Amino acid sequence: MRVFVYPIIILVLASYTFGASFISTFLTSYASQSIQAQRIVVEEGQNSRVRYESILRDGTNEIVNVMAPMPFEWALIDGKTYVIEDGEMRLSPVPIVDIEQRFIELLSSATSTVIATQNVIYQGEPSIQIKVITRNSTYVGVLSRGSMLLKFVKVERNDDSISMMYTQIVPIPKDYFNNVLKSFKIYNATPDTVEMVVWQLISNLTNVNVMSMKINNVTFTVVSGMMSPQSNTVCYIFKIDSKVSPESLVSQFKAQGYSSVAVKYKDVYVVVATNGKVDELKAWISKVFANK
Amino acid sequence: MRCEEFREKYIHDEMTEEEKHQFEIHLKTCESCRIFVQNYQKIKDGIKLLYTFKPSKALEENVISKIRRKEMVKKGLIFGLPGVAAVAVSMMMVFYVFNPNVSSNFAYEKAVSAGISLLKSEPGTTLTYAQTGNSNLNYLLKIKYVSDQF
Image (cartoon, rainbow over all chains, first blue to last red; front, side):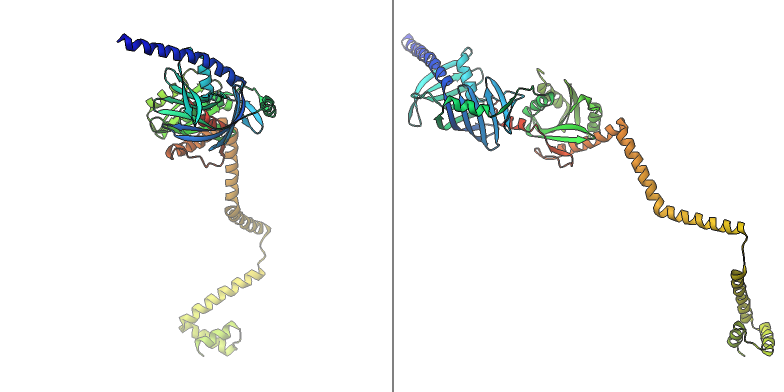
């Protein structure tokens, strides 16, 4: 038995040793790269989606222009994520996660992950595949052995997966990225409570819509969607100083036969109503406002 | 003479003395002519009164004021009620706008009815309420769709 086990252990250790030194080389190379690229991101699972993105990257800083299906531009600069609209960069109320950046972070930390590397041929080119296994996800990255450019990243968790495939990568001068970045006005204002709450709500609903409604000079931000398992839900977010009583809204919803609960969070009230059960609603609210 | 001839000459005051005498005898036996003469006399007296009667100042004022009062009631029915209604509605609106409690209740009803229409509709439906618009927080939805939640 030992005859078979020892060679395997030696092989694994050799692979890991080779991997560790290679990872370090790759991370150094990645940090010095400046590229303009196109990539396709495919999400498979409960929500299957495809999107096309144009990337401008300088090291770990990047400007991502989502071209389809929903145009949207964002940037990751010095670890902070920004939303780009009308030539302005505003601090995002929540970190925008990019699986490529997450993959690089995992390689950099490597404390709670298992990393394995292996030579592969990817699209006819000699490449190296890096596998990272975390507690609940498996990441696979493929990079060109010659240019050390990342060509493919895939992450799997349970029945869901996200794949990112580069279709075109063009190296660019470092100044180019900086000049594009300078063309934006950067605002570092802290996102307000309404933004944070709306984000928490839409993160926990499906088929979500965000609307704004003004009644008697009171602005209500209305988030509607579907709460798990299948209950239509509507949430009203309004400022505490708007003189609207959340209890009155709750009682009116209850009078119409709906489950309704009001939550006070910092300087806003959140009134939630659903056609589901009140216990489910309370559990959902606890989940939404957990750690808040 | 027949009844019609008597009556015609009587109205036009064309009877001779002899004919007048004959008509008086006729009236004793003809009830129809008697009623005719009585009615004719009443009308003739009324017309005469109309042209010759001069009411006292007090009576005149009394009559005129009664007529005016009737006209005011008529005008009130035509123009007054909507006016009163408009004033009442305005007062109610002022009450609603400036009374924070009532104003809030109004807002609650509007807000809740909008929410209920969303709860009853298919997921993903947007409100068509006049004062509803796209929120400037729609970019959060875009973040949700591009941020890889792993």
